[in-house]
Length: 112
Length: 117
Image (tube, rainbow over all chains, first blue to last red; front, side, top):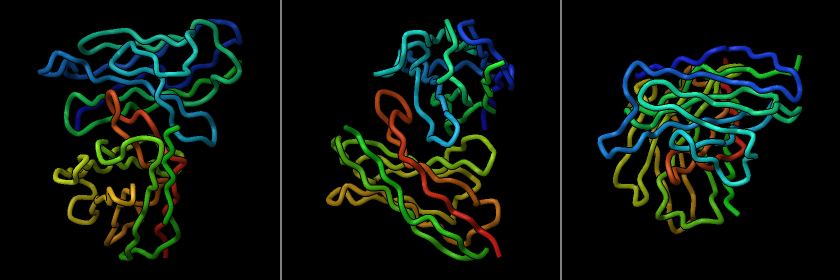
């Protein structure tokens, strides 16, 4: 299976400050159809995962605009412009370009 | 509103069988590709299986191939996962997810399967 490597795995952040999570793939995630099937998910404690970002940079409905996704090819980033208390949880990157779909290890975001 | 509600999770002995269900509502189920994703206790997310809208195409993770079977009843708006020859390592929360505008846009609340003697 194709490995996605997230960093850092633990991210203590101060409320109101920015946060950034990186995800790297060993192979390009550009599909033969020209699209890049790369997503970000948030999993709050005790909850199901929720998709935040699809196809690299598109925010899902209801996702606050403090969340943004960027990147291309093999390197991708999720940024939170100003961390709020409700952002605590584990964040996963995920690729659907290469079969089977795979997730990163997860990055635990906590408040300092 | 899209809703996915899983059921069927319970405690089962190694070698046993179980069928999970996922009741879907709020969208055109028969047109949607669906998946099962699982999460072992304290661990990350792992894709398990996929099925196309009409059920004609299915795929599985190597770890469950030959033991699990995904299916759907579009008349009942329900997705299934038949799990046979269960192993300790199959212990996890199993989530039903939809493929919409990319992968896994909606998730259910999950159902816990515990395999233990």
